[in-house]
Length: 436
Ligand SMILES: Cc1cc2nc3c(=O)[nH]c(=O)nc-3n(C[C@H](O)[C@H](O)[C@H](O)COP(=O)(O)OP(=O)(O)OC[C@H]3O[C@@H](n4cnc5c(N)ncnc54)[C@H](O)[C@@H]3O)c2cc1C
Image (cartoon, rainbow, N blue to C red; front, side):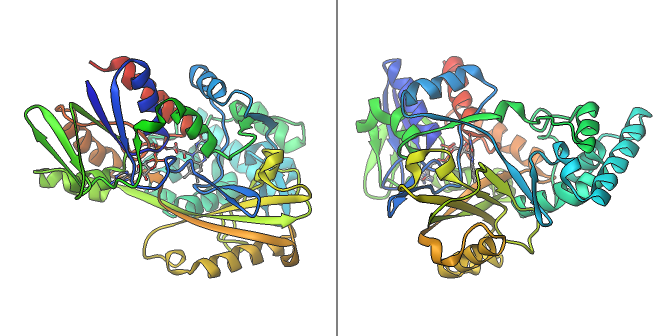
């Protein structure tokens, strides 16, 4: 069996690694000059920045976690999460519901009061199933936590109103906080949320891209870079994949590229499927790496819900993940801004983006302009799947079409699911387990 894998991000290289270990012949066709996709990293003046946004390694899935740990071997540092939310003038603990006592007293009261009112309504069975993501937030956390943090932050990161997003994907992803934790949090007894992420790891050298390289090592010569797939045709039970100049043939195709890139490569796709794909929503991310002389706070990362403070929704501190991410005596900051083509951010030049981000971060006191040694701006078109209210309808049409045989879909923008790295590797493992 000769398999052609479209896309050389984490999904593509993991598929190639695992299929090749089973004795299959594989080729990975990747449009960029190196594999990695969202898991790419760049070195700029001695600073290593992840260019698809800040990445850390964590998972509840122990089989996947041990695969990642084994493949990285000694190139892995472990850290205890120390994450904050910049709320008004202070850094409060993350998750927000575990930090109520750190808020101004009036805000703490507002969040607790609304939470208790919501809990009572929930206990009385007054809620019908949430019709959208905003309703889900309000029914679980109450209006206080929603108004102070969850609604502004989610509006900012998705670049889409939570009231127009589906609620189906929240169950299992964001745990319902135990009542005791909210009460303890309000009176100042320490509690931890999202404990599966409380200890995380990160490559010592090479940024997150080194994970992809480690997985790709046994099949390096099977990855063809600079090959943008533009057409796929089927003949005599096999496939031909072309970039307009060269053609690869195989018995099977697994696509890890975004559906939006795959569909135009195919022949005779029904109009309904084309429309469903073009109606899927996603956003893009700009990653702004900033290398500075001196120190940063001992935080892992900080969320910035308030758009008036900065357009960045999150700033991370890679030099706190690995000692080798920045030269000695220096530190690094990585800011992320989500956007969509045509909006204000998409029209900003790189220089304007750097100016906005460095000025807003300097204003909150993390560094001064004269400490900046280097900056690095990268844009990724496909960053987050946005689960709008038509998502379930559209994805069902698309999956139904692809389920009739032919091309298999594996990976974040191919399955069109909010999959983190562990979810992508789990999808690959499941695909290989179930394949015929
Ligand atoms: C801001 C941000 C932060 C994140 N942080 C974390 C984190 O901390 N921890 C975590 O576990 N996960 C994190 N993730 C998720 C993680 O990045 C993804 O789960 C993972 O990288 C997806 O891999 P993939 O191979 O499915 O997709 P991609 O990385 O998108 O790979 C797809 C590949 O296909 C290629 N391609 C596209 N079109 C074509 C074409 N026509 N021809 C050939 N090649 C093509 C692309 O160049 C790319 O290399 C984060 C994601 C974002 C956006």
